[in-house]
Image (cartoon, rainbow, N blue to C red):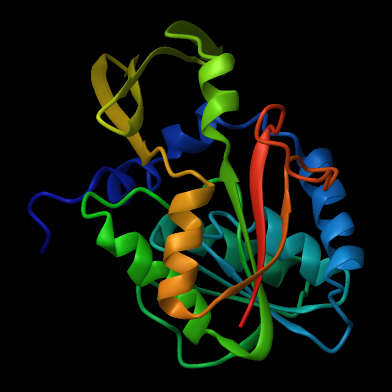
Length: 246
């Protein structure tokens, strides 16, 4: 039993996380995936591993396109939801609870890590462990895609304090940027109970990823700056989307 679990083990496994982010742009995510399919390209015969898949919004969509997809995530509740959706839709997608810092038992043609799903670990060396696992999860010549926030863009569009209402919950958000960490403090009440969580992600930049890629043996194929896959421009990029090859 983990008596002091990391924030991502608790917050991502609560229903409130999905309540807060219920309005994520599904159409944008699907557009992005369609662009990736053409860009890489992802062939019908390719197997795909979606790392930190959450409730499976990317993995389920790819399975609907006919791909053999496996999704892994630390959240048992999210994995249970994705499994239920795959069964309901009779999709060729499997989902398992798994820590991204260790490789799975099967190698894949494509590894995806989307929507800023790395950089949470208190020990920054764990990020390199995760990148190593991404590498080990791939067949020789396989391709990984890491979609991360772009720190300058985040700073430019920073909103320190915000109150948002989703359903019957009013969330108070307070953002801080200190010591190389981007943090979002989340507080709210529900059915008379007070709750408080903190999201925390390392402010990793291109140079940080380049160093990790060099350590594990990844070769950078492309760097894009948004979900339309525009070339990366450090002054204007909205995202840091890295395509690397084993």
